Image (cartoon, rainbow, N blue to C red; front, side, top):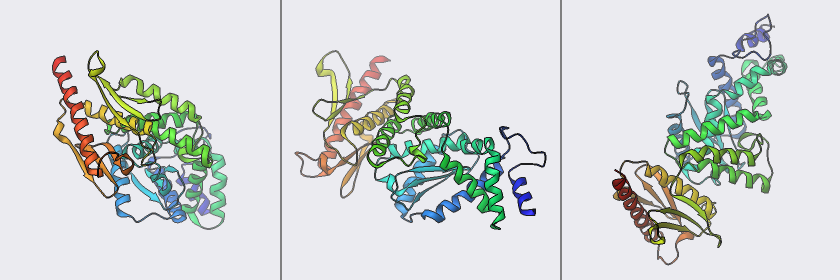
Length: 361
C-alpha cells in the first residue's frame, strides 16, 4: 500500500480523487520524472547509436530549434535510437528521439529540423501530459498494476507514458505541433518548405511500407489535411524565389527581376539524389534562398562549399543552401567543379536581389 500511495502522490492524485478531466494534475517536476522514466525504458529497448558525428548533428539541429521555441526552462536532449524503423517521438520533459532509419530519408538539416520541430512542439504544449491528465483513471490502472509487480515507481511511470505515446495525439494536438514546428524551423533559419517536404515523404513512405500509427506517422489529422494546413502557414510569407515542377520531370527554382524572359533567374535540378526527387530538392533550395533573402544585404562571397567524397554542401554563412551529389555532375569532371558552378549561379541571384533592394530604397 505504501508503494501505491507514493505513486498516487507522485501523480498528484489525492484521496479526494480529483475529476479525471481536470487540468494541472501533473506538475512540471512530475512531468520531468515521468519523461525520464519513459526515456530510460525506450533507450533500454532500442539502444542509442554511439556515432559521434550523427549524434552531434542531431543535437546541433535540435538545440538550434530549442533556442527559438516557446519553452526554454527545461533541458532538451536529442538522441538517435538504434533501429532501422523510420519514426520519431518525444517523451514529456524534453526527451526527443529519432530512429536511425529516419536519417536516411531526411538527409538535409532542414528536413531533420522539420521532424524535430514537430516533436519539440509536442513538448512545448505538454500534449502527452495533458492526455495523461484527461485519462487519469485509465492510466491509474496501469500504475497500480506496475506497483503490484514490486518494480516501483520508475516502471509504473514509464508504462503510463509509453501507453500515452502509443495511443497517439489528438487531431488538435497534431495540428498544434505542426504549427509550432513550422514556426521554429523558420525562426531558426531553415527552409520554410522543410516540414512540407517531410510530410510528403512520410506520406509516401506510409503508402509504400505501411503506417505504424504512432510517432511522426500519426494519422490525425490525415496527411492530405496536414499538407493543406502547411500551405496555409506558408502563404503569408510570400516566398521568393519559387519552386516549379517542370513537365519533363525536372524542377526549377525561379525568380523574376523584370518584365521579360531575360529577367528570370532560374536554377534547374534534374537528378533524384540524396533520397529526394527534383521537386523536393527545389523546394528546399527555394526556401533556403528565401532565408538568405531576408538579409539586409546579401554578400555574394559568403556562399561557400564544403566538399566530401560523395557530395558537396553549399552554405550561405550558416544557412545550408544546396547539396550537390554525384548524380548532379553532368558535363563536369568532378563534384567540386559543378559545386563551384552552382555557387556562381547563386551569386548571380544575390547580385540581382541586392540590385532590387537598392532600387526599392
